Amino acid sequence: MDVTLKLYASLGTYLPDHAHKNEAVVSVDDGINVEALIDQYQVPRKECHLVLVNGVFKAPGQRSQTVLKAGDAVAVWPPVAGG
Image (cartoon, rainbow, N blue to C red; front, side, top):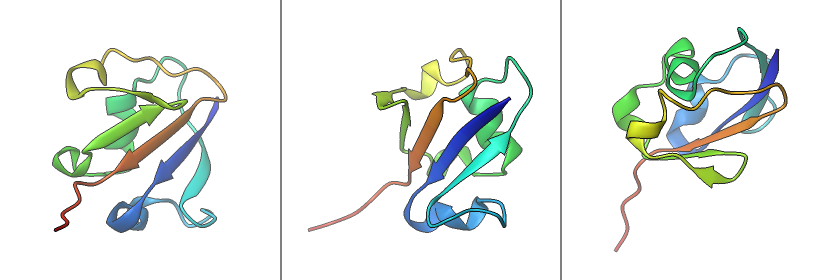
C-alpha cells in the first residue's frame, strides 16, 4: 500500500531519491505501524520529536501501536531550538 512520508528540516536526508521537496509517496507492507515506517527509512527515533499522522499528534508510546492505512500521511519533525 502507499502512504506519504514527510520529513522536515534535517530529517529530509532520509527520504528516498524520488522525493519531491520534503515528501515522498512510499510503498509499505499492509499493517505497518508508524515506528516501523520510521525504522524502514533509518530515521533515528531520537530525532523524531513531533510525529503527526493525518495531522494528529502521535506520542512516542503511540507510534508502535498506530497502524497505517493506505493513503495516510506521516509527518515528522526533529527537535528544534530557538531563543
